[in-house]
Amino acid sequence: MPTRTASELSAGVDRAGSGFTRELEERFIRYAHIDTQSDEKSTTSPSTEKQYHLLRLLVDELTSMGAQNVTLTKYGAVLATIPATTKIDAPTVALLAHVDTAPQFSGTHVKPIIHRNYKGGDIALPDDPGVVLSPQQSPYLGARIGDDIITASGTTLLGADDKAGVAIVMTVAGHLLQNTDIPHGPVRIGFTPDEEIGRGVHHDLPEDLKTDVAYTLDGAELGEIVYETFSADRADVHVQGVSIHPGQAKDKMVNALHLAAKIIDTLPHVTRTPETTAGREGFIHIYDMSGTSAEAHLHFILRDFELDKLREHGELLQQVCEAVKGGEPRAQISCTIQSQYRNMRYWLEKDMRPVELALEACRQIGVDPSSTPTRGGTDGSRLTELGVPTPNLFTGMQNIHGPKEWVSVQDMARATKMCVALLKLWNIPKDGKHPGADNEGRLAAVANLVDWAG
Image 1 (cartoon, rainbow, N blue to C red):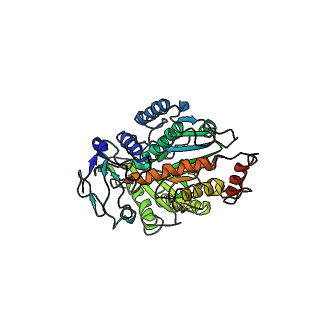
Image 2: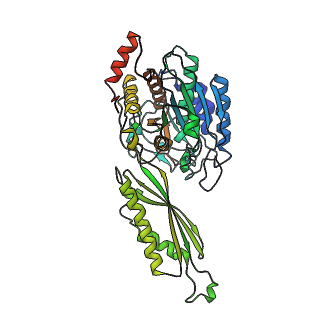
Image 3: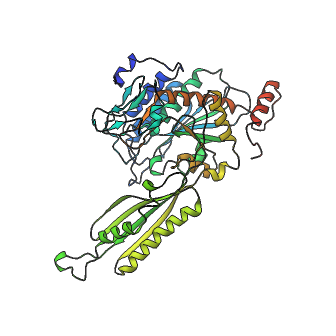
């Protein structure tokens, strides 16, 4: 199948006719080239200096396009304002995306490839022909016939999570600034670091964002509007053994690695793991282990949609650690559990307006919306918990966090159109009252979509 690299963009055509695909393509390719992996072990914010390469570029681009109040905060978030184009006292709406990519797979020297007018079948990636995208394994790919598909080259992730979202938000911002006849209230733009390591929402962000409602562009399939996510905890287990020269170790050494292995072996293997669960099932996932015979460290994430079940995962891990420690009293084993984020549904279900308006925006652009729980979390999970309702919107990203990651340019274009429609739907008075007859009719139509009483 013919492919093109970023240098061949000029030969492309805008088959979708949306007016957005060329800009989205160019922006995404530009951003994907920049290595922005976050680092959980770092204590700085952002966790990696290289995230600033994209953050500062976004500051420059927002300033050049005419955005107001462009700021790079001390904690590494980029914030900006698109002024209102209406005299209505409309709510402020924020569009957000995160710049970092996942630490699990290399994001260095990403080489995006555009597969024009996808005709179906397998896509073999050139730098590792063993890495193949197949519609048999990914039915969603098989449904994207005719789209322009962007992949990496086979040895890195692509970074569509969440540079697809970054490209969409920037394209929306530019479109609004160039088309001031589009009626909308104040729009806040935000780009955060470190979402992939659970540190995207600094405690100052809700106040600095100054918005009534927000949306993250960090979702997957076309039409996906997410208002239910995992609740998440992190668990750190420390095993302290007894170290001594192995030649003199009989009845004296306590090998920390043996005890760490026993903890892992005692935990469930055929249930409660990511590879054995789906739907609304939660899990206990060990994602990192290091150490020596003297001491070992195990790092887990705990996930579930309901808090009581999340608590059960943590209690099981603690019980296993206590049992292993009981079998070897000379060892010291600690298990520390920290809260990361909570299911945004707990707050959004009290007032579904942000979700219902997003669903309606999809319908207005001819996309059938869907809302299914996502087996993950977003910056919106934490923001919603802190008082800023923040559902998650689709971008088209697929197979994230690995070498088979890909995104459809046309899906990104539809997400951009949906955001513009959504901002127009929010162009209503905060108090629900306005003397204009036309506006009253539109308010009545929106009122039929949502539960204004919450």
